[in-house]
Image (cartoon, rainbow, N blue to C red; front, side, top):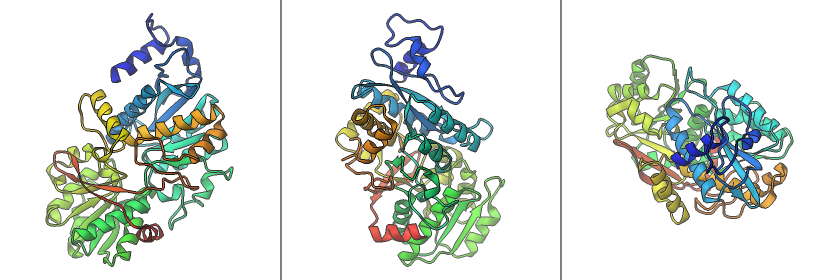
Length: 433
């Protein structure tokens, strides 16, 4: 499929000729005109009548994960014949990072959202991966009636009230008063509850919780874990930040060691100097077998192992939802297709969720056509989802009604260890912090 994508781009790009191309250079006229987006892709007959965009971090440590998500979206479009009902649909992959940092960027997220909202051909956005970027983009898309479906956002405050929500969230994200944002992944209340349950099952009784400074998503995750842990009777040994710009964390982990903690929980991202954090944890506090290291989904990627090296071995990291290996039926078939398209490389955890987001959006367009507001209604009215994941509905807040969380264990790669589905009371305790 990667080769197909390149061929399609060549057919669309001005100045490139191909007598057998499925589309013509005129199709590019409906492309979103913003420098952070790639060329319009389309593999169907004639020309596309609408555009789906993805908005993901295409640079930095999350680039490999995002590239697989983009390929999953392409695959779902290809499986659908590049059509949603009677509507021919093109695709553009857009980037919300900057090269200097490799991280999502406020100005870029804002500029992207404005471009999508202003372009009447954009029928929906698949993204974002980072919840902070989503909080910037949602209001612009909301005012333009553009649906946004995320395969990776987990911050509770995007959809539900919770302690620590900023600037009146989530209500402030929806100026029209109507929800336009949905996700196909469980939020951090589920993840915090599941990690607390897992820590308890591992025999951890006094975890020390660390979260990245000045990152609201990390703060929210840490708070969700604390709420779940306390509901289970665990004693929090410490609750503190790490500075992503620090050169080492030996003093921080000396404090962790003195606290008597029998486990360490990390809320944040690999990109926020996570490799150094993990290395110093092992050097000062002990191996992950002796003192379990349990992290949220921002660490559940190959770049964590690559950067932390041997120190990552034996650590646990969660992903909201089921692992690719655990999917069945159409989901299993989709993972097999994606694996083939990617030359046999291991499938990143969020890739099938990007395919699911594409399937859900295509179903919405198939039902509603190109009326943006009607597409939103159709997405929220789904019965069973897009078919790649196990069946779910989208609740009034925009969250899926099914909330499994997979715990992975690091060796040379992250491998599934167990799946936890926390009960509603524990999820509510985690959400309350």
